[in-house]
Image 1 (spheres, rainbow, N blue to C red):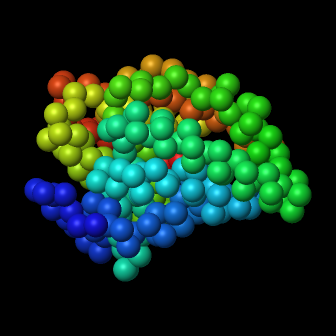
Image 2 (cartoon, one colour):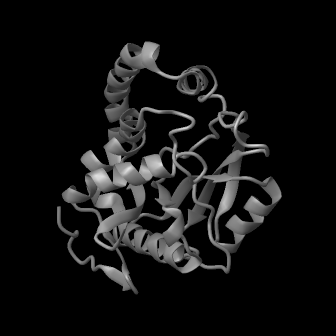
Image 3 (cartoon, rainbow, N blue to C red):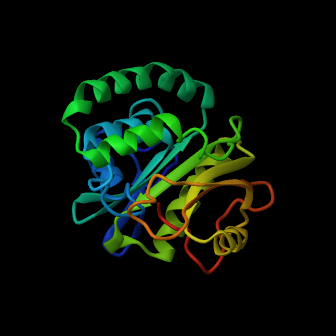
Length: 238
C-alpha cells in the first residue's frame, strides 16, 4: 500500500518515518513481539509470537492500514505506530477474530511452557480488570520502537506525523494507553506533551519477572488546543 494522498516520508539521518505499506506487515509483527515485554522480547513471558502479534497488530495492518506508521532503518522495520479512527470496525473485527485466536491458543495450550500458560490465565481472568477505561469515540494509537533506535526526537517525529494525519481527517482529540513504571513521573511526563491522564490500572502480568509496579495509563489530548507533540522528555515505549 502506498502513502495516503498528501503524505510524505519524513527522514532523519538513516531512519525513515513513513506511512505503512503492505510489505511492512511482517516487520511490524516482529517488532511487536520483540518489544512485547516492557520494551524487550515477549518470549520469556509468552512463547507464541505469531498469536501475540495477531492479537495486537492484525486489525491495524489488515483493516485500517492507512492509520499506521513505521520507522525504517537499514532496510528493515525498527518501529511502528498503530492507530485507529474507526472503533466500531475494530470492535466488530475483534468480536470474530478473537474467537479464532482463542481456539488456536486452546489447541496449543498443552504444548506451551508454564510461563505461557500463566500469561493466558492472566489474559482470560485478570486482563479485562487491569485495563483502564478507554474513549471509544476518540481515535487511539500505540507505538513501539526497538531499543537501538529509540530517541526523544524520533518518538516525537512519529507521533507528530500521526497527529497531523488526524487533524487533516478532521479529528479533534486522540487517546492512547501507555505503560509507565512510576505513577507520579508518568503523569508529569504526559502533561509536558499536552496529554491528560483519565484512568490508570496496575498491571500484574509481569509480576514474577519485573520487580517494580507497572501501570497502564489511558491518556487523552485535545487536538484543538495543540495539534502537535511538545516537551523535553520522551514517552515511554511499551
